[in-house]
Image 1 (tube, helix red, strand yellow):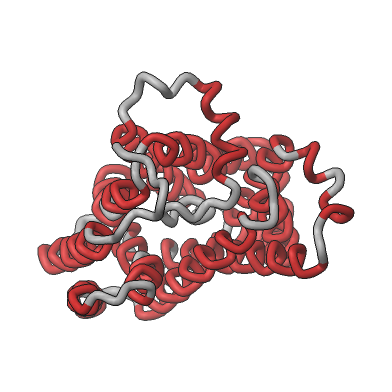
Image 2 (cartoon, helix red, strand yellow):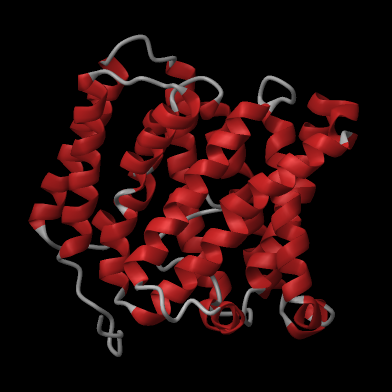
Length: 310
């Protein structure tokens, strides 16, 4: 998963998207950009899981966050030079809270990946953004979508030999994802471009560093693991951010959200193809319930004033 792939929640999208326009995405349809971004995130997650035999999940999280912090920090280097001077303590506290949430979310989902199949973990984690969408809605039918998603998670929990600790970590990641959406919106109102996300990534990296270093030790200095970790960071964060932000510039956020709802299914497919994680029919049915619930909850949302048309 990306540092957080919540639809429309990446702080300062306008500033960062100006950079991504240079990458000549104009000829690619926005839905294709979204699907490529989802695939990139999940392939990155699959690569990360392959590393768990050689380095603990804590160390992989550190490599991923450090990659994001370095790349985003470089892109926002001019703004970061004056960030302490130009922002209030409250702004900095919000960005720090954003970073801590980011670190805990990544730590939790990687701990979940290490215990349960990729598709199951991502499906459960998706309850976070779904809960935010339902909580912000006044429609009665959205409560029914929430019940459908909840039923899907119950099916997952009861569908075979699934580690309850892995499920608990996935639920915690979902809670953090909901927090990420709220912190991201608050940070984006105070920081220009991608600088808020850069600050959060730097804070998150330092927050997870003691745990990652203690668990992984000298393995973090292996050139081979560093290169693979760089690939995980690029696939899980930088590449999907660029694709998603370009897509958001050219399509309504509601449509973006519907397409992002396919992520649990893509995660399950990547788990089968890349990791050999064969799921039962009950688990596929559960994933389908959550995907349908996410699409349903997103489909009827009203566009904010001035939202672009597809």
